[in-house]
Length: 149
Image (tube, rainbow, N blue to C red; front, side):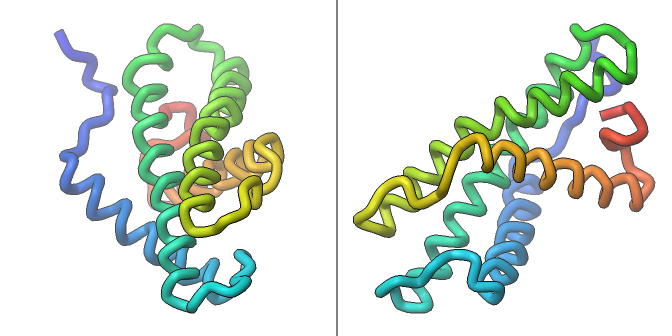
């Protein structure tokens, strides 16, 4: 029998939501000049930013589903312990996402290692997840803050 708490969404819905979210974030990062342009054209710079953000958002979605649909059910029901484990899980998930984003960045640039430090990205990723779950909480959806997700 299936667990009714499991999260389900069609692949097309996920892809559309991810592309829209990625585009919004990429436009903001492009306008804030977060990524150095170097000798890249504006279009190439935007493509690089979009690709990096897409890897993080799309990959992060699937890693979240692994936690929500698999790992969460094997953990104790202590809410403080769940918060601690979830935060640690986000940090661990940031490592492969960082490596993929750094690889995509190297496709657009001759130099490697421009993404910074993996552990700093891990802290930023935790902040991103906390922000995204805050948005879900504001919209009265299941989130990290109400202990459901």
